Image (cartoon, rainbow, N blue to C red; front, side):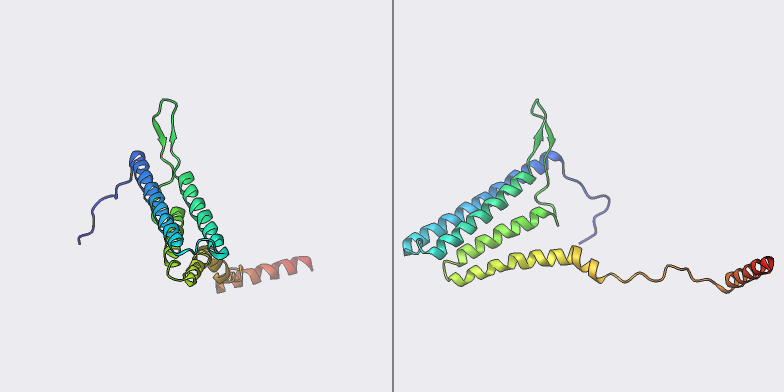
Amino acid sequence: MAPQKGKTGTKGQKQILEENEATLKFYRNMIAAVSAIYIIVQLAFGNVFSLTNIFLYALVIASHGGSYKFMAYMSAAKFTENGQLLDAGTDLNMDGGLAEYTKDLIILTSGCQLLSLISNYFWLLWLLAPGQAFWVLWKNFLGPYFMQKAPEDNSPEINEKKQKKLERRKKRQQNVRF
C-alpha cells in the first residue's frame, strides 16, 4: 500500500455529530439486546431470584447506565438559537480518547453478562477493567514519574581555560585584600 500524500483530512462538525449519534445508537442497542437475552435466559432457568444474580445485575445496570450516560454527555452537541450546529461535542470514535475506554467497558460488561449465563465464574473477567485502568494510569502517569532519571548536578562542567581564568581571578582578589 502506497503512503498517502498530502495532509490527512479532518472531520467536520456535522460528520462528527452523525457518527456520534450512530455510535450511541449502536451501544444503546447492544446494551438492550444483551440485557434482554440475559433476563430471558435467567427467567427460563429460574436463576433470576438468587441474591448473587440480583447484585451482579444491579452492578451491570449501573455500569451500562453510567458508561452510556457518560458517552452521551461527552458527545452532547451545542446549537445556536436558530438551530444551527455550533459544536458537535467530543468525537466518540477518536483513537486514544476517553470514549474508547468507555466503549471497552461496555463491551467487557456485555461479554461478562452473556458469558455468565454459562457459569458465574465468568463474572471474574470483570476484574480486567480495573487492571486496564491501572495499566493506563501506570503507562501515562505513574511510570514516567517513578522511572525518570534523577537530576544530575546542575553545575556545568568547566573546561580548563575557564578553570585557569577563575583561579587567576581568585589570586588577584586575594592579593588586593592583603
